[in-house]
Image (cartoon, rainbow, N blue to C red; front, side):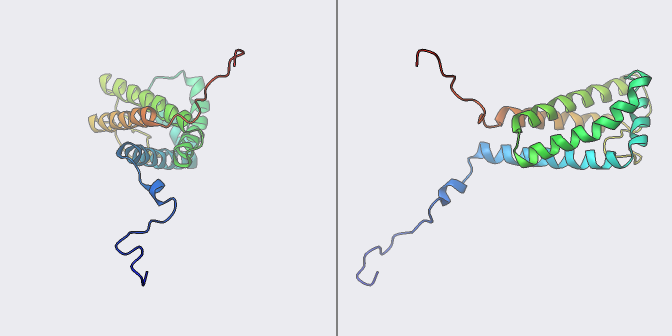
Length: 167
């Protein structure tokens, strides 16, 4: 450097260019982490009081009475697995699809309760008092849109060319 070699040149660390995210990747990462945290939290809180969740689920009047306890017991685990998948990136496409399907089902359940005039607590984030309102439906639809975005922008790592017998 004393002889002027490399003067004015910026040295880059090897591999640092790989840390830069495209706007689409940054958007996907933000949506994925946000949804993953929400599902992980919602599942953990519901897991702590499955009996209260069963009451909330029954109040929607969608499922046969005999299926409510099993549904309430399974839902927190499914939400936790979905959140963990979105946060960790393992089985990412499956986690994004699961989030999308759950948010669609939650939106339908919320919409039908409002349309039928059923006065109930959401049960979305545990057993706290949270009545179902149009804001609840709006939140569910916004999370559904985020889940659709996460599904559509998920990288296609699992797709590999299929070898043929002619190769």
